[in-house]
Image (cartoon, rainbow, N blue to C red; front, side, top):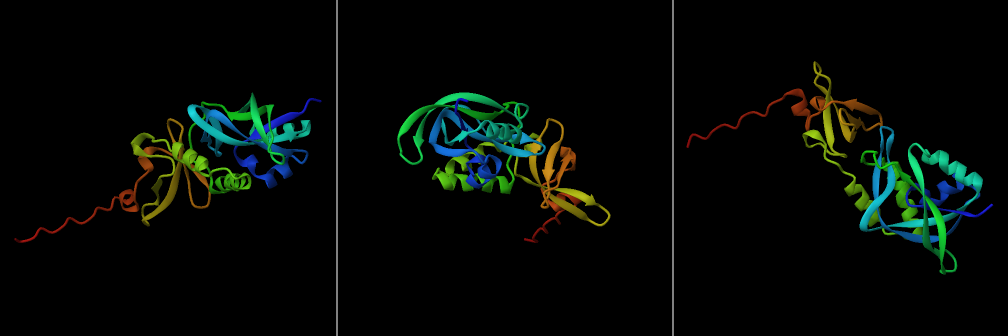
Length: 224
């Protein structure tokens, strides 16, 4: 069987994770995908890294030699072909041991472009950061992807914003949530325990006081 080479730009830069998922895979080198940028996109279950074309941008990647079994495992992990599709490329790969550069035909997983922007979980971001540190990649790529994935929604809300909702008006109870996304009708919110909810904009407030309808006392006028 012809050798297959896979390029990783996100969580599969994490060597420990790849060893568990694809025990037959081995690192062969690194490269840069020119003309693409990183973004976090996804669904109600979470937001993950993908790459999309952008002139002048670039994305550092690691190249793995994979077996047929490894590729099948990657297909399952990436949700191929529903969530991610595969694209073939040819890249100059710098050998991890020798430093020599050889052109290789590689494949990469790219999320379907119609998926909405969103921000990742803390654990996913840290997994990607660990991979970046392992290969010596500039973490600014991930930080820029995070910034670029903040999309403004109706009402001025954006991914990552904090909001409050009333949970028990009689007792004056509110919940604190983080905005994860907007599907065109409802917002996806997450609380501190990681539980997710859908809510309309009318239930979301910028502060606890606003949620409960508590008005600030008017300032007393001076007597001159």
